[in-house]
Image (tube, rainbow, N blue to C red):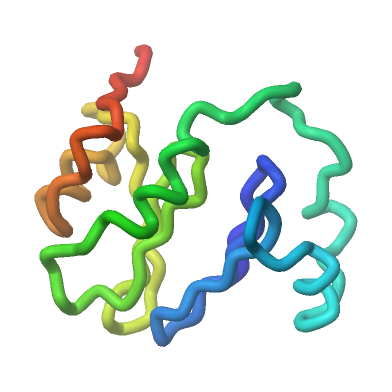
Length: 132
C-alpha cells in the first residue's frame, strides 16, 4: 500500500509491518522511490502544495511520534504518523486502518478510539477538536 502524503512525503506500508518513508530530511528521495517501484502516475503527484507554503500543523510531531509511540496492542505490525493529522495502523492480518487525530463524534475512526485500542499518545501531542 502506497500512502502519498500531500506535504511532500510518501510512505510504503507492507503487509508484514515494514514501513518505508521517502522525502523529508534524512530519508531517501522520491527519485529513489521511483527507481525502486516505478514513477507514480501524474495525477498522484502534485507539483506544488494545495495548502500553500509553511509547515503543516501535525508535521513537527510526526517524526517524534514515530520513534516515541509504542502500542499496547502487541498484534499490531506497524503504526505510521504521516504528519497530516492521520494515523495509519497495519494490523496483524496485514490490513490498513486509518485514524484521525481530530476527535469528532461524527468520526468513528477518531483519536479517542485509537487511544482506547492501541495506547495513549504522548502528552506533547496537542489534543485537537474538530469544528462542526
